[in-house]
Image (cartoon, rainbow, N blue to C red):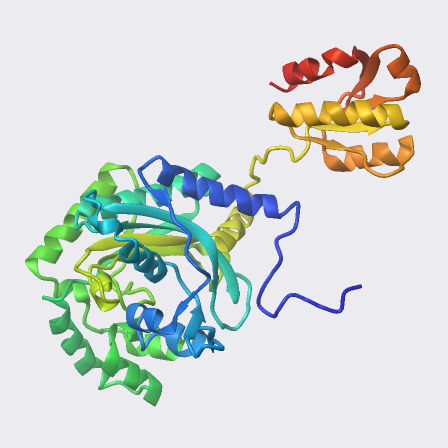
Length: 420
């Protein structure tokens, strides 16, 4: 037995369960690829300052949850706690916004890291698929991303999720609301850390999950009552486009999300079957983030969907994914000549796109057939010296138990015909 274990709050993806995670990633990515989004991959660590500026110095992510470290060369780096800042940094560094085709539409998939109290649905290492549309201010983009996420979830068979929607205003109207909210918060019985947060970014207090804080927030001023005409019109168009697409949503005036860079549209996907960790994904518009990290003005919008929590949501609904068989054909050779012949058959099947595996090692027929059963293969090909002397192999249907001889030179075509 190994003396090492996965670090606390992390997990290993192991077959057969790992196939579900791959299927979820593919289902989320599929509508993005069909909508003009290109794949991007960024490093697993970035400058600490990128997240301090972009995510927000007052956020729990930066103050409490980031894995930060100093390199031997003295650089201050952090394991990425979220994807948007990294993707925007990469797009700016590569000058994608100067190619003349805005918005730049990108999607990504990867692991992210936050030092949190481990519990079901909340890990210190987690997986997300995300999408960003960079460089355009258009309600249709906001609506597009919400619709694509809804499409991805429904393609997986999820039904019991809800979409929460809000507007956080912009630099014109949010300062007025900010001042009104701060005046309200200063009259509450809050601890020193929460009061400090209220001074830096009072909207973050609305996102506080503690019951004693939420009870005091009853009657707090709502941002929707302070939106300027431009933000009201923008938000109404987003709502109309989503509705016209047949996507249901709920208005949530207290939805602010946990990151400082959001402006205007903000949304969250929640699943009530997950308990306290009900959010399975979310996102919004971040029109000022590019300037925060040293770039030009690039209004943008995006989201990230949690692969881990989506799998939990599927399990909560009892949804069984239709996963392709890991192995369709399993070859069992009996003798050295059969090993040579069947290995060639397996190689040809694989070249033709058929999932095939082989009985490796010196197993007898009984042990090799046990492996064939465990593989989940629909068909097993068995050959011994007598079979080969007659120019045939034995083809066994593992579902019906039927076994027939097939010519060695015809076995690949026969299997292709049966599995097509």
